[in-house]
Picture 1: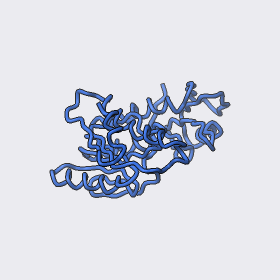
Picture 2 (picture 1 turned 135 degrees about the vertical axis):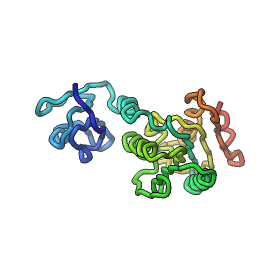
Picture 3 (picture 1 turned 90 degrees about the horizontal axis):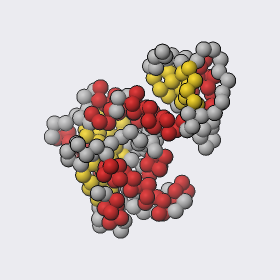
Length: 236
């Protein structure tokens, strides 16, 4: 048996006991860094194509490492989102303001609140830097796990259309989804406005499809926005 102490898809973040996930990205193929990860202390690697490895290393081969990562990483961290009330905020504008308004309301009610936003991550009253609006799957689950360890009961999270389209929030069950507005933006990534809208709607579909045994599920949707009613249709 191999004991896994950590998981990462970044060869630079590998430490002793890590499982390294080789992702075939748009610009970088993680399979080229498998042996670098092993040299740094990885005890197992998750791959989707043949690799030559140095030493006695556990090699796990799957059809798609990204899909496998979305399944195994939340499991490794014991599904931390399930231990908190998860509030996802999406929209072109107003995500940060809305997130911090929600944080202050919850804090005033005596809850310990975590925030994952464009500016920073907050765990209680402590602030940490952030690099993406929504961290990748591994970083996100690590952050959520840290929040649970530090006693956070409610997590407010800005959820970008990129993260929804790329599956970065896989393994997170939201209790509440908030829609601020939608304007022409990010079409370099989504190509069409319809794709952009569909990406945003995924957050509300996740609320509808998530564990219905938890009470208090809901959505807050700005129907003054021209696209608010489309979002309502996606929310059951």
